[in-house]
Amino acid sequence: MHQQVVIIGGGPSGTLLALILARANIDVLVLEKKTKEYVLSRIRAGVLEWNTVEMLRKNGVGSRMDREGHIHEGTLLSSLNKQFRIDFKNSINKKVMVYGQTEVTFDLYEELKKYNVKILHEIDDIKISDLKEKISCVSFKDVKGKLHSVNTQFVIGCDGFHGISRNHIPSNILKSYEKVYPFGWLGVLSETPPVNDELIYANHSRGFALASMRNENLSRYYIQVPNTDKVEQWSDDNFWDELKFRLPTEASDTIVTGPSIEKSIAPLRSFVSEPMRYGNLYLAGDSTHIVPPTGAKGLNLAVSDIHYLSEGIISFFENKDQHLLETYSEKALLRVWKGIRFSWWMTTLMHNFPNQDEFERKIQLTELDYLSNSKEAQRAFSENYVGLPY
Image (cartoon, rainbow, N blue to C red; front, side, top):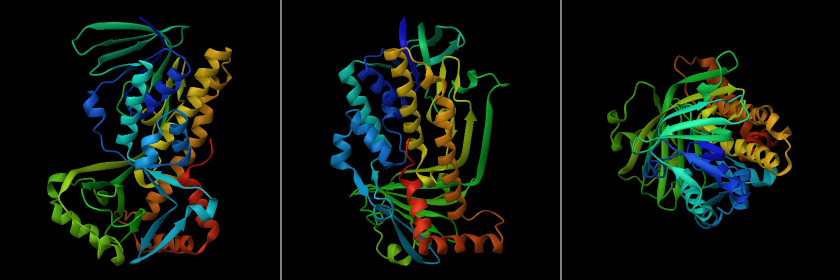
């Protein structure tokens, strides 16, 4: 077999790249370890930067998002039972879209059908070779255990933090940076109306909380919990009680509770690996960087990677120009590190760290007070939250 591009990973970053390349008449094969049903059922964050919104629209997957998504022109932050609003629209004349990553992935799969892109699921034992040669090789076993081998000019690793792609960059070249946070987010999805039209980020002495949503009757709530906690320890009633403690009274007094339809604990880490390219291998999304969800940057950073990478691949095939590919890692990492910084800052600002002393608590509260009263600070927050330019 021969393919111009082989993409490892059938999540949103891999399928968005496949769609962009297919629209440019570039031959693509997508390999995914999990079943299609599993990929389309994964619950992930749902705040889309405006760059991401425009990328999806540009590539024909914006119509359902525009019908069912919710445009947010600001967000709320709270501490000491007081909340304030940061107005993106007034600060920088931009906004974000709340539309679940699960929905984005579904839309991408539907659109890819028009271009007859092959997405092979339940793939196992992927091996990559000859990355420094003109043509590389990707071998794998299909769902029936049959071995296949594909020659390709480009191998794209979109297979997540635990994927195999990053491991093909030699250890003497690959440099990783990581910060593991001493807590996780316990998240609950419930078929209840959201407590507020916009997200509420709550700083509380008992720990962080977030009130988010998917649609008018599907709410997503989170509370900070120790890394040692298990989902089984948290009944629905205990979760709702703790959430109400942490949200400002004007929200907790009006929140509608109900049975959880999904409950999980997500650990928090900041992670970046450099470079994002080795020979014919290019990394994108979670395979090369992870952010804590506080800044709503995970999917959005993956989309910016795909923006830079798709431009480079298309320029190569259409113009025989390798410049954008040669500078991909450097250019993408500049934006990645800015997203890492903002997510780290928000996480540090809003969470209660173990052994946090009174000085550190006072700094958090002073920072929030400054943010609530400074137009310039709110402008900087808005600029980062809605997404820095590509």
